[in-house]
Every structure is written in structure tokens, then in C-alpha cells.
Image (spheres, rainbow, N blue to C red):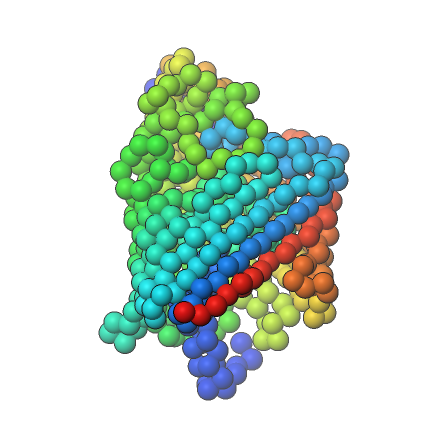
Length: 420
């Protein structure tokens, strides 16, 4: 929903044995510290040594309309539009990386990624220190990385069961949020209750931040209850001069950069103010691990000024997205997954230039968008998995846009490895 006004005064468990459960927890904890299971990227080796890894996802889609949707109306991002990949073999995503553990407590990691025809970019370049204090594990990471919004959110997108990142990730954090910063994580071995806390501090130069502004803090908490895991996340940013290409003026493709309105406001809609990102997720599964369930939500709340060459408006924007996944391992080599999504935005602009600003920013309408997708995956040809996905996306007031995608995903996180 969008409101614009010309004046400031008006608005537009079956239980397992205790010993077995402790063993499961110990394995998960060790892997979590060194391999960061909930992160989008695999972590360094458990023991001193090195590894080289890579991943590749290819797809070909058939659709009546452009696929993926070029730009969702009523969503304030950076203005770039997605390239139409319908009826052509496309590079969904590719990564190559190296990681090393030099001592039991010191490690480093580098990973480069690329998608479609866009430029390759550094996704991870960080050092990691881990230690025990007060009988509990701690971990510090510093460098380029993606702020972890939780395992469900981080894992949805590249190399998962579906070809497209959830609508919520696309609209709230521009699909992937990569920034420079540091995180401090504490964990404790527990089966019920608070399991981990992570504090972050970010340079805040990537969307949803801007080219200017102060460093930004973040907080993530993880709680467990038997087979269920819940996580919440929050980040508080203050972007200055964050630009979005005006409607019809953006480039085709995806970029992690942000236009700088302090250099020029020509053909841009610019934002100064506060941008807060919140997330929550819940995941679980059956005792036999055949069924898995997860749900997540993201919310970007922005308050400040939105301006163009032709006007300025006081701006309030809320973008929220939800999705839920159900997965069944039908046979050892066959999986069926279902995803349901919803995306909604609401914008309020006040001031004499509100209408012009809303038009340039593409906020004159903000239809609710739904997407439903069903995917069938086979691992018979491991390490390559094959996926057939059928789905449809629909914005309120518009006809549904169905599609079918055939995908091949290859992942080799330990392609080459050795010990020091």
C-alpha cells in the first residue's frame, strides 16, 4: 500500500536416549563452531589444514512472461532490474573458495561468487578466532562476510531446493547482504533454551545501508527446544545518500553496490534516515528426518527523507515478507519440497514533492505478491543434484505468472584438501 500527499498535514519429540542426544549435540556444536552450519558459506576445516571448494548451479526456465520478474512494483531497492533468463541456459550461481585452519584457534576463509552474467564478487574474506572461556565456546570473525540472519534465512537462495531466493530476501536485503564487519558469537550446549548469541558491528556500506553513514550494530539469538530451532535477528542502520535508480533508468542485472547521491542525484531516488532490518525463523523436523519444516519472516522499516531532483518528501516505508517450506525425503535419493511466500509493502510520503518522488521511486502502487512453488529433486547422480520446479507468482490485481525450471546443482565444498 502506498500513500502520497502534497502537503505535510495530510497522508497518503519421540525422545532419544540422553547419551545419544548429548552425542548429537556435541557433533553439532563442533561443526557449528568450525563450519558455521547456519551460515551461507562452509567454514574452515575442523583440524589444522586447508581445503578448496566450489559450487555451480545451472537452470533453464520456461515461462509465459519474463522470468524472473524484472522488478517488483512498490519495493524500494537500488533500481536494478533482473535479466530475463526465460528459455535460455543460465548460470544461477557459482562459487569458488579456499579455507585454512592454521592452529586450533585461528583460521581464514576466502570465497568468490558469480551469478548470471554479472561481475564476479568477493562474498567472504575473513579471519576467524575460536576459543573456550568460562567453559563455553566463543568465536570471533572479522572481514567481508554476510551478516547471518539465521540458518533458515541464510540457507534460502543459492544452491537450495528452489531456483529463486524468497521474495522476502529479494525485497528486504536485495537478495544477499554482503558487508565488512566483525561478529562475536557465544554458544552453550543445551537442548532446551537459549543456545547462542551473536553480536555484530558493520561498516554499513552495502544495501540496506548506503554509501555514507555510521557503523551499524546487529544482534542474533538462537533458542532450541528438542527438534525445533528458533532464531531472531535485528540490525540498526542509518544510511545517508543511498540511491535507487529511478524507474526506467536502472541497469539490467544484479549488483551489491549502492548509488551515491552525494555525487549526483540525477535519475536517482535518494534516501537519508534510519533503516532497521528484523528477522525471525523457526525450523524443525520429524524423528526419522524424512520431514523437515521451516518458516521465516523479514521486515525492513525505514523512516527519513526521500528525495529526487524534482522534490523531497518525508518518508515512512515498511517492507515485509514471509515464507514457509515443507520438505519430504520420499526415498533416499528423492526429495519433494513445497514453498509458499507472501510479500507486502507500505509507503507513506508527505510533502510538496511527494507525488513526483513516489513516481520516480516506483512507489505509486505496492501490490501484495504471492508465490507458490513445488520442487522435485534427485541425488542419484551425486555430487550433482537435479531439480524440477513448477510454480507461479502473482501480484494483487494482476494475472498469475506460471513457470517451470529445470536445474542442475553441483557442490564440492571439499573438492581438494590437505593437512599442515
